[in-house]
Image (cartoon, rainbow, N blue to C red):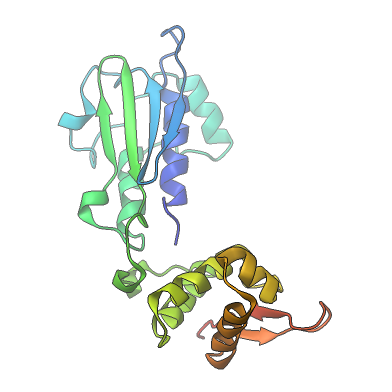
Length: 226
């Protein structure tokens, strides 16, 4: 459940480095990260002088200020020779879990600046309101995380207990063994309450005991459907 889709973030960073205007002295590409968004600034506006906020970014043609740098990034497989980076960024968001139209990436430019805003898809989204559709599923680890989240949502426990379970899972993942001390450290709960959470997870079939790491060690179970 990434806050920002990885491909979209990579595409924005690559574009900022490739298309920056190096003639603007004293400026550089930089990133500002907030709770609800990430903003990437690059010196230099659109190469043709247009303002990106006034364009249909699904069909903006590729024009490169620095073709040699663009070719180098292409040889390193960080960008394609043709195609609109804007469209790829937006498509990556539209297929992500928790996407809503108001969270679509925003692009803004002047004659000397270019700013892209990537919104945090998980910001202020209560666990009980998460909607996971089949169109959002990908392979491997993301499916595992989504299956686990759905299992936690179905537990007949109070919301704070669900949140504490997710805190522990985020810290240890599926493969790392953990015990009551880890639960206490990550949640700030007492030993008795931490033990109760472990019992809830055991009874729900979300964790299993593991040997070779000392007494009372468990790990989360990958519940991948065939």
